Length: 234
Image (cartoon, rainbow, N blue to C red; front, side, top):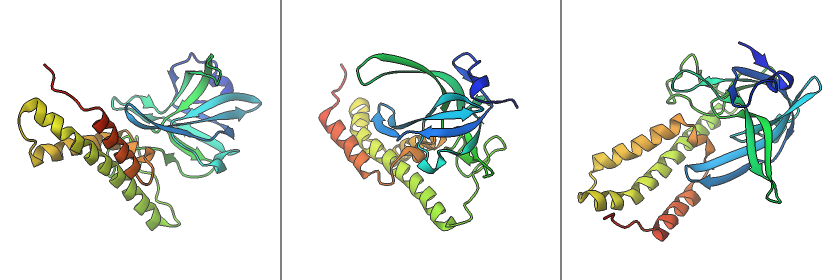
């Protein structure tokens, strides 16, 4: 497995996925969060440095401030086809505060990657497989030695939050289903719909992107759907 650093990864063409990358995280900006078309999102910028070479970083999850200044080894996870996923060299396109277009080459890190800080055990930022069924390519993250019960409670709460949000989405979809089909949605259909949303959300690691309390997100869902009533297509 070849491990890249800030100097060698910049020799690659943008869009290249790598199996491993290592450097010191010298800068870490506050994370930006929001709600988009596909649900909540998180972006956090930073800078990697190694042997005098630097490269910008972009994380699709939030890291704590205490990680700044630490050495990290980032290894790729796998996608559904078994290909490396989670760390790549990309062109980041955006507009600055004056509206001018900006392009920068960055090391993009997603929730599929495994992060090893110093001598710590690898940490997964999201679930590549259904939780409870770890695979050799996606080992389950270690249970913390301290406050293990609290860690388990938090993990359960994250999954419960996702399930609650999936139920809220399904509830507002019932009238549209009945309007389009002319039939009432059965309890089995409702349960299947919620289950599908929940499992796909777990696969994507969406439960780790949600706030501890999702009630405000659910209210936003309901308010948006009330303001945008769907009419029956001709």
